[in-house]
Structure formats: C-alpha cells, structure tokens
Image (tube, rainbow, N blue to C red):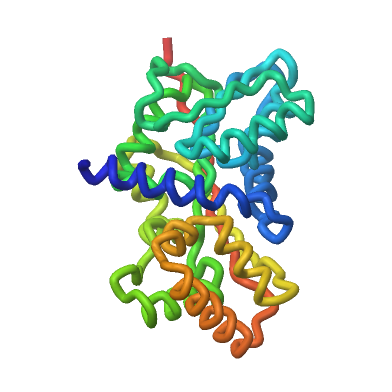
Amino acid sequence: MNELEVAKAKAAAAYNAAADYFDHPVSSFWHRFGRETVDRVDLRPGECVLDVCCGSGGSALPAAERVGPKGRVIAVDLAERLIALAASKAQSKGLDTIEFRVADMLALGYPDDAFDAVICVFGVFFVPDMTAAVRELWRMVRPGGRLAITTWGPNLFEPANGAFWSAIRQERPDLYRGFNPWDRISQPTGLREMLAEAGVSGADIVAEAGRHPLQSPDDWWAIAMGSGYRGTLAQLDPQTFSRVRETNLSLLRASGATSIETNVLYAVAAKEISPM
C-alpha cells in the first residue's frame, strides 16, 4: 500500500476500534465542537451540506437540523462503526435528510460546486497531504458557499497526552510518536498557510482556548479508548496494555490534573461568486 492507503487503513481501524467508547459521556467535546462548527457556518434552510470525517454525527446531526426538511446532508467517514452510530442517532431524532456513506473523502465522485457548505471537523489531518485534501473539498463548494475546517490547537489533551506517550515509550518505544499530524496547523498562521496552498484565501480563523474537565483519571482513559489513541492501544498485548494504562493513570494522578486542554481552531472560508 502507498502512504495514503496506509493512512486511511490506520484511521479506519483506529476509529472502528474506538467506536465502543466514542460516545462515552466523558467525550462530550466531540459533539460540542461539531455543533460549534455548524453554528459558525451559518447554515440556512434548504441548503445541501457535505460533512466529511463525520464520526458519530457531531456536526452532521446539527447540520441536518439547521437545513431542515428541504435541505440535505451527506455524511461521510471511513469508519463504518461510527457511521452506524451516527445513523442510529439520526433515526432516533427523525432526521431522514441525512445520507450516510462509508467512503474516502478524496474519492467521493461529486462534481464541482456541488454543495452549499462542506464541513470537516477533526479530520483533515488524517490525510498525509492535507493541502490536496482541502483542495478537493474546496472544489466541491459552490460559488457563494462555505468551507469549514476545524482542527486541534496546541497542547491537545495535556497533561494526559504527555503521560500517555511516556507510558507507551516505556513499554513499546517503537510505537512512540513525538508529534501529532495536526501540529503543522495547530496555530492560525500554519492553518492559514495550508489553506492558501490549497487555493483557499480569506478564511476567518478563530483560535479558541479551552479545557475539558476530568472527574478522575479514569475519565481520561475512556477518552483515550474512544479516540485515535485506540489505534496505538490496539497494538498492545493484554499485559502490556494493562501496564500502559496503569503508568498513564499514575502519571496523571501525580500531576493532580482535574482537566485537560482542548484548544481548537475554527476556519470558515466563503467562495467568491465570479462576476458575470
């Protein structure tokens, strides 16, 4: 497999594994940030929306509520188990205007200018070439439409993240990761530069600092189990898994942390309407 295929396979495997914890109450931030993204896009009734890397519906469900019965939302993700979660929630809410697809956001087959809004929340960094991914998403935005990219800011999930990778390095140094794929775009300057390389100019970028409460270190472990960390944990044998968990939580207890950082960048760009 080439680099892109390997990245897609890893992302799908990690989040299919994480599906059993993805909607755990302690991970409520997925839906909070998804709804906030939708608010910033200012969707209107009757609009057609594409939501890529949709997860379990954090942005797709509020988008469908906004566009109403005359609108349409197409929600796409590589992880079929997350798509199943999202579809179940949509059914329970009576949102029958969402079409769910297990598919690659780089090969959807939609024509140019197909959507009033294209949304990608915490997903663009899973593609090795983020610029190419944004260029493809931008292609599908109609003139006058909007593109929304939401990504992580600096120090994600600290101090729990650092404790996690310290525990991994202690047990399996071959799995240790010294950087995150979103590091390049975790500051407004880097995100703006990447968008410009993709042909997207004039984006409104907002950096929002935040913290997510932890009632106990066990809350953090549920977050790790329901997120991309699961891809690393899935590679551990049961004994190593137990040791990593205990080391991670012991380090977190020693820090006295009662919250983790959840800093976010929101970028919304409108595509100009060409003069007649």
